[in-house]
Amino acid sequence: MSYPAEGTLQRAIAFLAALGVGVATYIAVEAAGGDAPTCLAGSSGCATVAKSSYSHVAGVNIAVFGVFGYVALLVSAFFANDLARFGGFVVALGGFGYSVFLTYVEIFKIEAICQWCVASAVLMTILFLLNATRLIGYGGTDQLQEAR
Amino acid sequence: MSGSSEREKRKAERLRAESATDAGERRTRLMQLAAGAAFLAVAVVLVLIVVNSSSSGSGGDTKLEGAAEVNQRLAGIPQEGMVLGDPKAPVEVVEFADLQCPYCKAFTEEALPPIIENQVKNGEVKLAFHNFTIIGEQSLPAGAAALAAGAQRRGWNFVELFYRNQGAEASGYADDAFLEAVAKGAGIKDLGKWNAERDKFTAEVEETTAEAERLGFNGTPSIAIRGPKTDGLEAIETPGSTGDLEAAIEAAE
Image (cartoon, chains in turn red, yellow):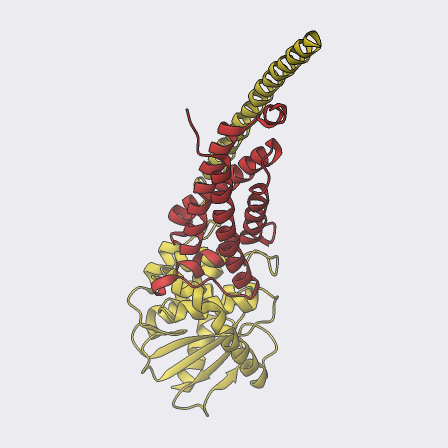
């Protein structure tokens, strides 16, 4: 099976992770200022989700964790070794898993959809797929490349 | 010369073969670790979802009692802001209360129901809830949340349901999850609007608290009454029973 070139995957991961940093930073900054992110088309879903009890873990806004996660993914995209591939995969896996849980919470518990959270969930899903492809396609090739 | 070159070639091939073997083993280990991490992630997400789905459906993990009963009892009675009853009712009874105050709960649940059932429903009296926050720091956001409910004509549903599920005084129970659950249980139609607006009502809570202090009140619940025979809004001694309140209403009519 052929995989996209690792450089292409790294560039795509870097681009999407940078977008993710922007989205998560916006949510975190708005929350720190006591506001909720502004939903498009006048929807109040963002305010409802931002003020729900699910928006914080151990007193910290989950967007802050998101910022750290996206930054870690961005950093991992700049290195072509197994540590970066596996680290990127684990971070993206964690982010993707938590996004699944948060989407469930939005739909079935809070009963409101925050467009910024959906944007982050979509980014994290794509990042998970890209990092999984990178790990499966190029994991364990460090020594092989050195030998060549 | 050619013998030495042959040896170097064989050595290079052996090194390449060893590297390929090492890479294969390393790759296998990485894939096993990745599969383990994926399995763990799926398990954690499933546990989170199962744990959350077994808790109450609204407002986080808070379970409420009495929502149906409260909403049924107040159904059909006009509400405007925090005023319950016909806006043209000649007598207005104003309750200055803190949602976290157990005496306010007792007053609302014991003294007020007969008044609501009779004088309020027949248009003689209207009841107003004014926040007088004295218990703890959660009283302010709780009061603002009640006013935001009032903006959707569910203020008294919110207040009564809050009292019905009141926790130990200033114990920290009145957090966002609790307020969300009360708002939802009170039948607020647009929870997003309620959530977005409630901070804006903080100033109004502070205003009514200042109003209570101007009237000379220093505890909750405190009662004031306005009617044809009163000089504006007059503070009265907090009625100990429905009968005492009925007498005060009669004097004001």
